[in-house]
Amino acid sequence: MRTNAEKVATNNTTQIATSTQNIKKKFGFSSLPYKKQKIVISIVFLFIPVLLLTVLTYIPAISMFGYSFTDWDGISKTKNFIGLKNYQTMFSDIKYFQPLFVSIYYLIATFIQIGLAIIIAYLVSFGCKASGIFKGVYFFPSLVNSVAIGFVFLLFFQPGSTLDAVLNMLGLGGFTKLWLQDTSTNNISLAFVSVWRYIGYNIVMFAAAMASISSDVLEAARVDGANKFQQLRHIILPGISTILGLQLFLSLTGALSAFEVPYIMTQGSNGSMTFLIQTVNYAFVNHRVGLASAMGIVLLLLCIIITSAQKLVMNKKG
Amino acid sequence: MNKRKLSGKEIFFETIKYAFLIFLLLIFIIPLLTVLFAAFKTGNEYATTSVLQLPNSFLNFENFKEVMLKGNMINGFKNTVIILVFSLLGAVFTGSMAAYIFSRFKSKFSKFVNGMFLVAVMIPSIASQVATFQIISGLGLFNTRLAPILIYCGTDIMTIYIFLQFLENISVSLDESAIIDGANYFQIFYKIILPLLSPAIVTVVITKGVGIYNDFYTPFLYTPNSDLLTLSTTLFKFKGPFGAHWEIISAGIIVIMIPTLIIFLSLQKRIYSGLVSGSVKE
Image 1: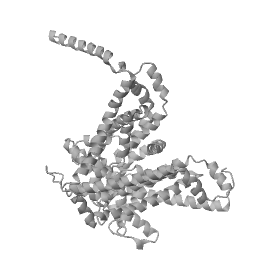
Image 2: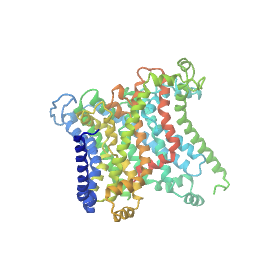
Image 3: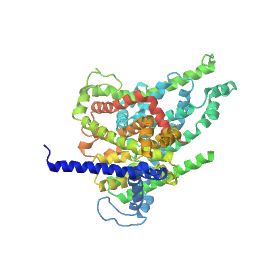
Image 4: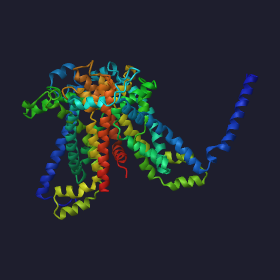
């Protein structure tokens, strides 16, 4: 049984509902002229994306810039303005810059990776049997979890494990080393993991670009006496130049900000510290947020320089 | 063309080519194969046999049991799935709405916002976590699943590119005829555009989903609480308790890779085309 009060309440709500419907009809979105609708929808649809972008990307970038002039530890309420001291500290002691030299390993690896990827993409793109299998196997690692990749190669490089076993099998047992501890090999090993992981991605990209090059053109070049190298140099490379530029610069900034796999595998020990591992350590382990922010800003500037260089080069080419 | 007889030089080239490709194949497969072998070996067996040797039996699931029960992988799966579902929902909505505005209303305002997304690519996100962390903890989101979800929802330029490419193939005359029928812009988006975007949505879900599934640093930094660990951070924790037990760690690696392998084998073409459309924008 419904009480009177309940009836009144339901009556009221239906009344309110119908009246809001009327209001909607009068002032609803549909009744707005399309010009005004455009403004409303632009604001409504962009509000959340812009809010997230501002709060999680731009404000952090700007406040990082601010922190870089303070001695903040990330915990206490007070931060003192210390001017350029963090930058001075960074530029005056080589130990803060050492990690940038580690990046050189990753940079060299990047060039090898891109070069190899072009050749492999060329080989699997034109008249190759089972090209799907080759491409698939080379590509799969780039989809795999970073921690899994890190652990696969921790096992791979363990003393007496996969790499050593393969070398022994080939009669090269004398070359075995403590791959991840020895300072002469650890960065090369880590850079190799990075190439192993991402080269398939580059191969797929280049192969996609090469798919638009007709094999008739290559056939014609062959008939005219162009060898494989000339075909690659004069037909393939110009055909993929846009995507090549994009991939190259993307990989360069990637090499500069190498982080996850080396962090998972060595935590930056024995001189395998990358610039980003160092930044993160100063921020969250040593509690020197001010200094870490200064490092973050330096990395940001380097990335901006590389990206601007890319824009310049690509625009020149048209 | 293929029927043409190969010259001696070409046969030589073809041989070298396949030898090289197969050699590479081995480089890619061997590290993964040894992990697979190790995952089926007993502790004693792992210690006494070569890593390249097949396990005694591929039916020894003890390591997998250990991973699931003691390694807390089930909890990791649960958290990863929750984060995936909400982040992908958010990313699909924010990405498709932003792309719709960018492609259909080319006002100064929308161009400016588009530029904001483009510039944001240059900011190395791991470095700026130094400051993002302060914001997330300021909002009281540290050690909540909402922290990674919000971070992943933040639209990235790749998602927008994928939607933009599909939107450009949806004729504007479709929008116009809907306007003549009296539809408003919201209706056009939800009733006409969004359903037509479903292939793009699938592509975004795959590419972005793989990225979220594989990400280590965001959960490592924002949800260290043991109840909130994702698959990545759960596996990372294996280093401690299972120390030198590579047969158990290997089982963990295999468990985490199985969903990836299934997705890859079933959606290979989609993944390739998704990556390409996300990276090249004319």
